[in-house]
Length: 100
Image (cartoon, rainbow, N blue to C red; front, top):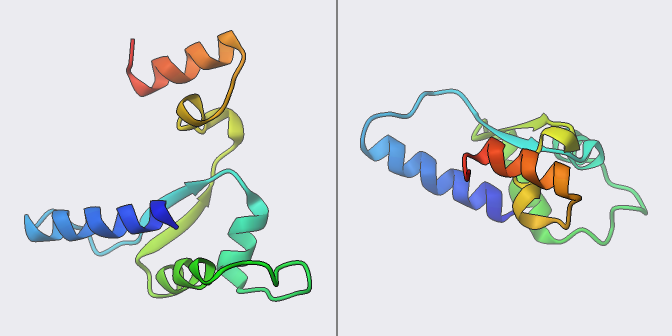
């Protein structure tokens, strides 16, 4: 949910300086199950625990604010900052983010 909130804030910023396109902002997600829930608004006994923030993200997908796109875990650069990784993989992520 926080990523969606940040995207909305950035869209507002870019809109205020007239640099916002009319297309949906891509939100890169490495969980295909989450993407399926967002796109299809599935409801089952396995998804009853999901909080209201899920509905917020679904709403932003439905109104065209965000576009949920799949990215493989190997290409998810944010993982270098959020997960414990092996040295080689960590170095790849750090370089990909431009921190070297």
